[in-house]
Length: 82
Length: 366
Image (cartoon, rainbow over all chains, first blue to last red; front, side, top):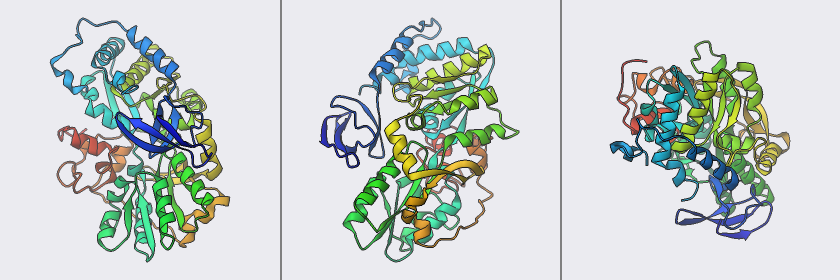
């Protein structure tokens, strides 16, 4: 979320940036979102705020998985996972 | 971009693939419910990487695909009426009804517009007070807040020229229908993360209890999907099926309260026909009584139609996970994205379109 444009409960609007592209999104479902938060946008409407604590927890869990000798990280066909 | 790049990390994906291979002592069959997940699995080659370990069968979670022919035919009839502008998502306009698609109807003089959001259709009605704008509302729980918000905005603007042709559907009753089928091969479900983001995860608890089957709420990026698959496989191996949430960064137990209130104030649960699956009890939503003046079917005095699916299209079997798209005799020859026979070949969430786009060859019959 880059900038709030309107805080009306029904017509709430904010500028949201998607990897360099910015567009106005309807914010009535996520009135609690603040500038700098990440939101899930579906058909022009922000439907949820991303929980950064939960996201970090998931990443920590991933980091705890062992590396597997049979499956080196760098495989020639790695490009298929982009 | 944050919250995307790290979920596409090939190193994390390799670790998860290895963990899945280590965990599985037999071949498990999992169903990913959402069409967005189907496309991501095929695009990233996850189904091929897990061949022999986990079979992924593709669920009915493509809203465009499960919209029944009669709804498309109703929309088509509406758009041909003088003064009516019919708006919907782009994919919906390309799906063939029994008498052609909505785009075909546009070629025949119907006023049909593709919109990015239902709220764009409200804007269209505001700018064109002499047109009757009908939004053809399709989609699962993820999309219902956008329709509900559009409707409330239309009411706030006191628009008399905006209405909805509602074909919204609910995921959980469709999962019940799939499990109830005697030829169901599914051992566990990857539930659709964005549906749960809105509607919550807790409704799946009784489903898990009743069917003794794992349900894992799963996201859409490769690392998300592999985490969901790993959790499902671990549960199946331990014989301890549970409801697990592997998409907790947006999906919460009770869903998103503001979005749910918005939806619940406008819609109520109803029985609804699904393309390929028949009438599913409690499988859809309709407008509540106080909102029916925005119901296009009532405004235009529409009767229901009964139409039959074309026999050369096996989309019903594909949507129920009974066959893979490549097992359909029409796949890739009579039916392609340019000339689709059925909706799953059209949509960006359809399983047939995913197999065509990512080059899965027509195979020996499943």
